[in-house]
Image (cartoon, rainbow, N blue to C red; front, side, top):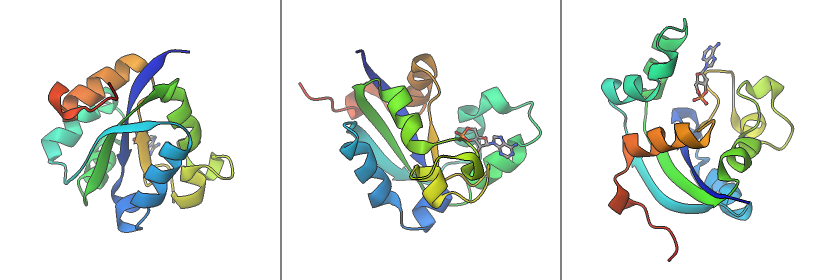
Amino acid sequence: MAIERTLSIVKPDGVAGKHIGEILRRFEAAGLRIIATKMTHLSRREAEEFYYVHKERGFFGELVNYMISGPVVISVLEGENAVLKHRDLLGATDPKKADKGTIRADFGKDIGTNTVHGSDAVDTAKFEIGHFFSGCELHPLK
Ligand code: CMP
């Protein structure tokens, strides 16, 4: 199986709810390596450019306002099948539809306030990782 990288963002509700440690613990327990991580407070421009694929959607303004409402924790995860593995740990986008035991089911409130973002494909992950990290900030095992 291919070694992949994916981008994970603990959103403002996950940080405010003190779930950072538990969320990152679940990633490591599932075999995903954290090869970069940082806490930051996104600017409007950073959030708008990150979510540019959604800019025509009705929820775009709400999504951006939410993502800049407090600090977030952004990580790069590496491992076998990392994109899908991470998304499986998160559960469905809408926490009300997420399987029991997933991060969004356990901590999310609604479709906007859904605790963690995860890249949806390897190509998307490449763009998303490059948006927040330079190559020398990534620390894969040699
Ligand atoms: P995320 O994985 O960060 O990717 C895009 C985000 O848009 C998604 O999680 C949701 O939080 C948000 N989103 C998707 N659909 C809606 C919606 N109908 N209303 C509000 N937010 C949405």
